[in-house]
Length: 267
Image (cartoon, rainbow, N blue to C red; front, side, top):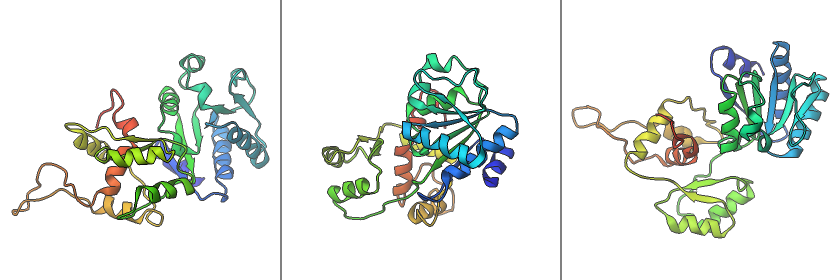
């Protein structure tokens, strides 16, 4: 918890908590919510499934004694005595719903299963409450790095590890692979490519603070830490981004397209 609060106190408004399943993610974010309330703020715990909202409310009460209001369907936290709300992103993403709140209503937003937060619904909520501190909580932060593996083998790995419930962006230069994965039931879409897309995506990444677990993602950690511009024989930097040792970097660019390609987004 202290690490999360330290990030916010030093001006990093959005941070991510990664813990394996069963190691206490809900307990940690309950403690963060309690501290936010002690500081006089309001907290929104946001999720995409009803059972996650129920679990969050139950764990929050058991761990801290805090009772939460519900922001979902016909239920609203507005006018409630409680300083914590558990909210459905499906309900809150509607503009008519958001307009009921002042943009600074919540001081803290906690997102359970934060690997879903790139979707338009989550981004709409986060953009509205743009002054809030944000904590994303997830157990997913891994890589699958393989050479000469069939599409069927890759699809099986994705399904077995539970990564098949949100959109997967693949290299559109391999349309057969995209179609193969779709036929196996995966929500795969091809990456958007065009003039300047690589440069735009790379510059967008360069302006972000990227946290990589070197234990779970050793290949991604190696690529991001060792990638550099090409140089000519005199040691001068050559314009452009070399297309070498960048598989994880490209995959990251593709996955973040919902943000990098958003209208008004800048590198």
